[in-house]
Image (cartoon, rainbow, N blue to C red):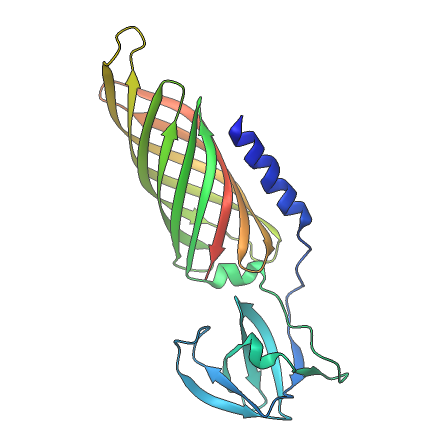
Length: 247
């Protein structure tokens, strides 16, 4: 099955990634003439201060190619990786800059991703966009396609996600959501005849986020679903696996 090959590929990528560093920070000395502090992790954020050569800074976390630093006066800001290229640790050798951690994911506000999966006998693909309300509670929108031997369709929905643990590399989550699905079934006995179904659905899910480094996570989720039609309600199961990127 095509989905099975994707799962094997994802798991191989997971095993190939090294472990991330533990939480914490390190001190470094600025080796360049100066570094510029931005108010956020990007060139579009304004520069509000500079730190001169020889000053000591604490480097605490990373988002993409930007690092959050603080000097001895308590001034904090974001510095581009290239500006820290020659930053020195206390030993006098180039500093090993910290990587992004799963805790940074839980502090980030937005994330995007895609998933592959299966709902009963049909395969599914979806894209999702999430916004984190607190460090443990987030909201997510999703839209996707449904493919089967005799059916095809699409769906969209919204869900809430609870992720209470920030320090584990493999972190569990609980999800609850609802949405709509529209799919068509062709009658094999009568060529050209189509049966169109518009259903609401609700689900409760359990899953794991596995932080693989940089700004990416592998996401594995199983769902218990109730598909609500005009005349009846059907219970089925779904699972999905995919990648998420946060920023």
